[in-house]
Amino acid sequence: MNELQQQILELKRTKNAVILAHSYQIPEIKQIADFTGDSYQLAVQAKNTDAEIIVFCGVHFMAETAKIINPKRTVLLPSLDAGCALADEITAEQLRNWKAKFPSAPVVLYINSTAAAKAEADVVCTSSNARKIVQSLPNHQILMAPDKNLSNVIAQELPEKDIIAWDGVCPVHQDITAEILESVMAKYPTAEVVVHPECRPEVCKNADAVLSTSGMIDYVEQSNATEFIIGTEQGLIDTLIEKFPQKRFFPTHEPKSCDESCVCPYMKSNNLDNVLLALKNMQHEIVVEESVRVGAKRSIDRMLEITI
Ligand code: SF4
Image (cartoon, rainbow, N blue to C red; front, top):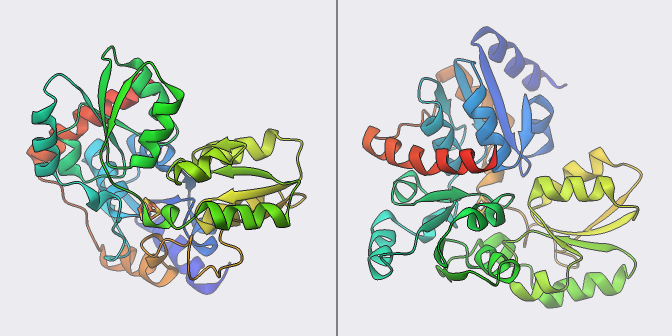
């Protein structure tokens, strides 16, 4: 532990705070986190914590979700730059107008969305439970937003459903092209290929498995293979290297550099300096207007009821 990490841990203890970190965070943050996981696991942790303060080392929609489901806690987001390009792909107003065109179709909204958009949805999903959520709905026609690649994966898995997808993408995963993946596969022909459902369909088609970040960790643990090509943000690859030192992991961003792709600038805007400042100065506190919070909580609770 370095000095900064020790100062954070001391403040965390005296202020009765908990640090929740997404898998895409830098290793130095994950080392001091009480819990590291994907957006679904972090939402469950946020719901169940009795700490006074949640320092959310992730992006804004995740911190908002924590505040929505556990409003008595003070939720702090260390970096003001920790937005999400995918969450910005659909506004509440756009969602309202879209819904109006398909009045009998329920809206399954990816958790990577704003609180205001969640308040317009019927049920929220994450990449780890999207299939289960869609399957649980009796309707044939279903609207899914904002990630068209995740929606496409679910449409392939559940052909009995008519899934209408919003045209949004995560630019970090969209940067992984079939050509890049093929060049890495040619270099490591025996490696198993595991990619995130936010990747392009032509990338998912070439993969042995299409999984959420927590699903990827479980897959690697259970697989007899020793080499894996991983198609998601670099932070998850850092976690896999640490958890499974006897296995080898190759990112899909070769031969490009990490700076060019597969590093989420929003996730990486959190660092030890701003985590310390968050705890010292109680910044930046997440506030969700009550009518929005109640609406968004309904769609998140519905997800939790289906999956817990
Ligand atoms: S990787 Fe970054 S931009 Fe993409 S969905 Fe996650 S937080 Fe948003």
